Image (tube, rainbow, N blue to C red; front, side, top):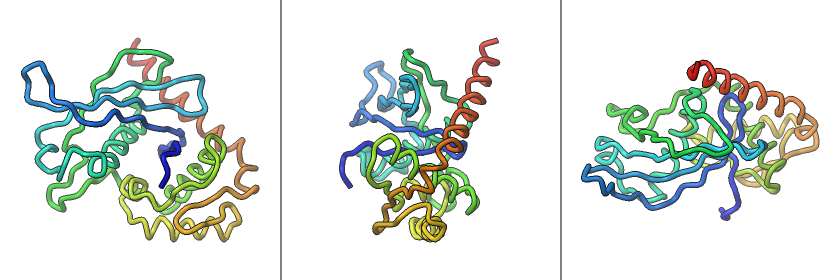
Length: 214
């Protein structure tokens, strides 16, 4: 894959991109923990983003093979994406760094794997369609559907993701190129639907944080 911006979509329909400032750094405060600065960007918005400090718990540190991007990037992206799905992250035009715990909440000790919640085939297909749309709309080119991070987020396999992508291709919504896809005109014609989904999801998120502020 290239270093082009990759769009990840929440199950609610928000298009996100992530800037992770590798590597993990050890705290200088005397506490024995590691942290990673990150910025969650809400795409197709007027500069809304969420700067976060990802704090690595001791438990997760023990189960991680290494603290390098190749081992940690997918789980971190999905942990942050799940926080957005749960309306725990607020997007602002500016703002101070917010601490976010990268903990064992999403680690299944019995199966020794990350678990972010199983999605139905319908939900996965909708997420894939949104991903291809937003990648085409905001970046251009192909969307990588074989990305293990996507399969991990919905608790399935890259092979199953691609099976569902084939059904989208049968519906003339996307055109597959290996494990990547480009948007067909029929998919781009659904712009109003995808952007309405985004507005609704953002309104619900903002309503939740406004309520918490009182």
